[in-house]
Image 1 (cartoon, rainbow, N blue to C red):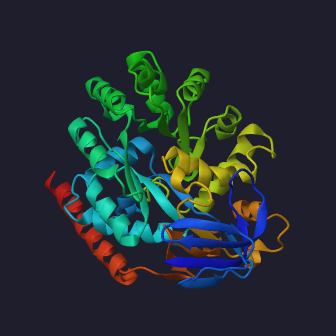
Image 2 (image 1 turned 90 degrees about the vertical axis):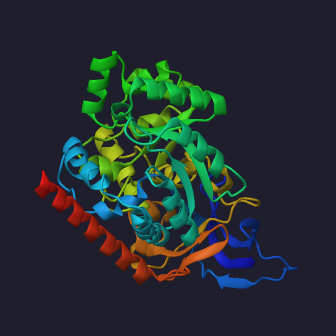
Amino acid sequence: MRTRLYNAKILTLDGGFDITEGEIHTNGGEIDYIGKPKADMPHFDTEIDVKQNLLMPTFKNAHTHSAMTFLRSFADDMPLESWLNDRVFPMEARLGEGDCLKFCAVAMLEYIEGGISAFMDMYAFEEETVRAASEAGMRVVLSGPLNSFTGSLAREAQLYEKYNGSDLTVSKQLGFHAVYTADRELLEGLAELSHSLKAPVFTHCSETRTEVNDCIRATGMTPLEYLDSLGMWDHGGVIYHGVYLSDKDIDILKEKNISVITCPASNLKLASGIAPVERLIREGINLGIGTDGAASNNSLDMFREMYLAAVLQKYITGDAAAMPAEQALYAATVGSARAMGLDCCDVLARGKAADIMMIDLYAPDMQPQNDIIKNIVYSASKKNVKMTMVNGKILYMDGEFCLPSDTDRITAEASRAAEALKLRYKESLKES
């Protein structure tokens, strides 16, 4: 399948932020040409006039819990510890086989309409997440929800082997939930597995003051230092959130090549705090952006995350020039992709995977075009996405999903499953 996207403005993010004019050709799942029109054109199965709108890399949602769409608006206006222990964990304990498939399918729709081609997911029922992504045509990276109550090291190793093959749309990274849900023996075992596989490790880390203070009381070290003492970062890794980081933590991030994924909307909504991402960028630490799950956000919208990531740094530093739009856009695309191990689709370039987003530059909120990148970060929203292409396939175009499954059926099935789950939850409360 060969596709020609012509008469376009193009932002490749391959070495800079210059916007050029020309066209992109895809062949199967790859980009095989970017530039001016050729005199000798090959045959194309599809030709699309972009009409001087913008083609750019898709967003990569570097931290989320896709199936948690069933908890959207169910546990709002609560601090993190109560949110987890009183609402989220009890509901999750009643999930049944097939539930996560339905809930993930809803998240796929939200990702696709928002220009997201890939997501890094931390949740149980991994096979259901993979199936939902595959049915939608999405790219997924699994990052284990391993803790002392669910999962096992053997399971992590099994999934790592199963999903790191020739299929570049599905991959697996080693991971665990957090220091406060994993005992030392489990963490030491995971560090050993990381050494054996020479693989990085992914986890929630330093999200709240309570988490950090509890770890210091128990171990004499911050969570990042404690994990470093166990050899967890010897092959690099990624931490989600990184809101409370000491100077020594930042030294460890640099020394051990650890990326940080910021989730500003979730951190604000749970009153967790604001990550010092402007400093992280200055220190040369790779930054990605994630939405977190719909239970704590509640939207899976990378436009909103970019905006918040940028403007919050201006507030906490007292410097309106901090975290310029270019840095936020880079983090949501290239930075996230590289943290996720997706160098195959980080930028638009020949030989890279054809994960391409088209932005409507002629909507009122994008006028005038004084600075397109500033407009994307500070003015645009999901409604500006005209096309989402993943691996050479168009999944969304001009407000319509191009999927094999009926979207009304997807949302209806998820709604019924969520209502049944809430009923089981309410019945358990009566019994107790």
